Every structure is written in C-alpha cells, then in structure tokens.
Image (cartoon, one colour):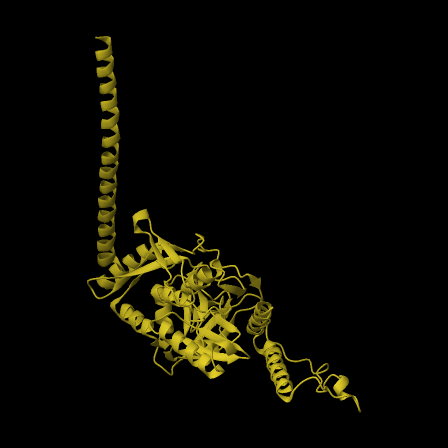
Length: 441
C-alpha cells in the first residue's frame, strides 16, 4: 500500500511539474503578445497625434516608411527598407550599370563611411579612398540622416556636380571634393598579364562576374601561349565591396576541386546551408595570390577566406573590412523591398570574419604616392663586367638562351618599375615567381 501511495504521490508531483512547465511558456507568450499589442496601440496614437498636431502637413506614407526603416536600421547597419524606386535601382545595380558616383557606403556612428570606391568611376578618379567619412553633402551635414537619405542626396542627373566633405584618417582637417555624376558601367572583371602572371581584377560581384572572369582568364592564357607559359594568377580583390553571394561561391568554385566553400547559419540551426566546390580548376593547379585591403568586403571575403583555408592561395595585403553577414532581399506588396540580415557566413575552417575581417598571410601596406627624389635619381646604369673595355664574351650560352635571359631580365625590370605604381601588386608577382622557383626545384 505504501508503495502504491508513494508511486501515486510521485505521479502527482510529477504531474504538477509538467503542468507548471507547460503553463509557464504559454503565459509568457500571452504576456509578450499583450505587450506587442500595447506597443502597436502606442505607435498608432503617436502616428495620429503627428498627423493632427505637427506644425506642417505631413505625408502619411512617408511617415510609415520612415517608421519601417527605423525599425530595420535599428537591427544592424545592413538591414533597411527599400522604397519601390530604391528597389528598382538595386536591381539595375546587380546587372552592372547605374547612375551615381561609384562608391559603396555604409553608416558608422552617424556618418557615411566609404567601404570602397569602384574602379574607373568618378569617385575613384576624384581620389576618394576606402575608410573615408563623408560628413556633408553640398554643405549639408549627414548627421541624423539614414543611409538611404544620404544616398538619395548623392544621386542626381548625369553630368551634374556634387560637393562632398571628407574626413580622412591622417589628415588634420576636413576637405571638400567636387565630383561630376556619371553613368556607372561596371566591368566586373578586368584581366591583364604582368610578366608571366595573369592579374584578375574583380571589382564587384554582380550577374556578370563569373562569365567575365572565365572569359578574361582564358583570353590571357591563350595570349601567353598556353597555361604552361603562365607562372600563376593574382586575384585582386582590393576595394571590392562585395555583391551577390552566388557569384562569390561560383568564383571560389572556379579555383577549387572539392571541399566546402562557405556555410551560412541563421538563428535556427535548420536554416544553415553549406556550399561545396565541384571538380574543375580554371587555374589548373597553378599558384594563386589574392590581394585584399580594408575595402574588400562581404563576397570578397568569402572568396579570400575559402581559398586561404584550403591553402589554395596566399593572401597578401591588409586586413579586410569584416562584413560577415548575409542579407536577404524580400519583395514587399508595394513594389519596395526589405533588406534583412538573416545569417552569418563562415569560412571552410568554421571561422566567422564578422567585424574581424580576413587576416592576410603576408601583410603588405600600400605606400602613399610620393614624388621621386630628383637629387638621388640617376639615369646611369650600374657598371658590370660587360661594361668593361675588352671583357671576355660568354661562350657557354646559345643565342636563344641569351635571348631568353634578356627577356626574363626585361620582365623583372618591368615588375621593379611597377613597385612605384602599385607596390602590393608587384609584391604579389614576386611571390608567384618564388612559388614557381620552388616548384621547379
């Protein structure tokens, strides 16, 4: 009887615990819903009071849009509301042609911060740099504006002038820059050959990136006389603000035969996704050097992180921007859209670069341009044995071998000259030469 009572008592206590555990979340949910409804009522009251009592007539639609945008921008710097016009503009930009200055911007501490200028655009030609802060547009302070408002102020008819005030690290005082707005036509990838290295300059990740990359790489390899004539590839991601996730995955896949490229993880574990490489390497195993800097963000960091983790590339330059979040663009019934941060992304080794960036394997700063020191400049060639009168000739080499040596020397001198123009790129070319020499050994 005692056993039965004990069993019954235990069952009763257990029942009380279960009931409490079930009831508590239900009560919390009801309390949360009540609180939400109260806050919505408060919003409605404020909205009506503004409409009735504000000193001037207000546009109700603009009020609601501002409230929506305020709600989204309070989450993080990359979530925002896009009006129908802004949503249409964004679609055009992903196709690679739009009007404006040619800068990727974000908001930091109330100021507009330049993530990166885009190659060949009015902003780049005017000398705007990654990390610059835009504090005023045509004399009007941007403090207190949303990012979309500031971007709208920078838009305007092609050919019109805009004056922006810049605060730059290392420069004591703010200064003004005049820029003429133009139609921005993005060439996602520019390919060229420096010495025996094929340089692939990726400026953005839009719908054209993978196709541009493949065409440019193949054209340069063919012009060089085949893959055997190429030392390797330099993927230049400096000042690339990012773009489409699927294009970053496709570019990474182009140089990897297998393995994870990137994974994304949302709030719920079931929402996570992994993207893996398929067989096929455009570079056919040739060494790769990736160039990054503080203007390399988002999709650029996915590519750099994937190839770095797989030891497929050496990353050179300075720390990247550190944007490790994924935004989903959700169409809205009014023709606008909501850009919402829905996940973080992780490199193959499982590291998130959010706010930390990709750390280069070799840190190489880009020196500021400076005029040549005329006092030390000289046109005289350094003396050598060959310069001496009556020196013996070299009888151990054929004419073809001598010609090859002269060609190699000319390429080395061209790379040395490149250091004055682009020190980081010249450094990357030297690394490729070293890798090839080690491989031949």
